[in-house]
Image 1 (cartoon, one colour):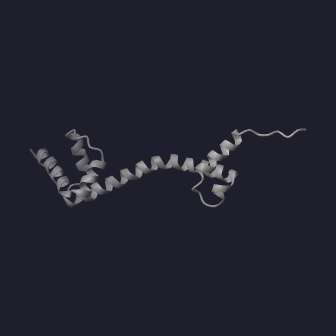
Image 2 (spheres, rainbow, N blue to C red):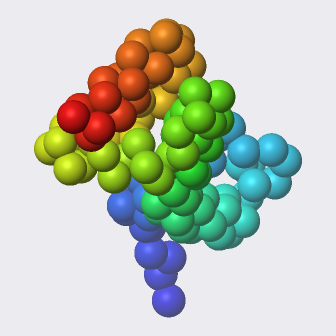
Image 3 (tube, rainbow, N blue to C red):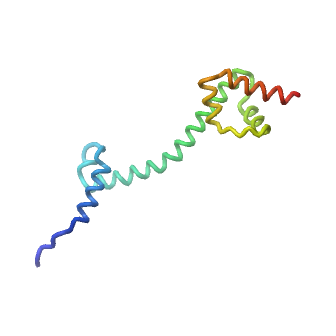
Length: 119
């Protein structure tokens, strides 16, 4: 039986896998089978951690807002509730950045909300 010369398709597939896995360590970047397994594992981790990253950042922002508002004597839940009542649609990222870089502005916002609530 004559020898079949394989075309370029399999080589192209392996080259793509090796390029993806080129930054992996050891056999994970050199051997095709382990590189394929590591590529699949990496893609699963990337997909999973995109959602996890969103959750972790939201938790961080809430913690920062809570710490800053407690210094002013207002709870986090009260501040967010009053923001919604006044229809100030701010996501948690913006007040967290204000709390981190310009704390006096956050105090002014919370005091204005409290003042208008009393009036």
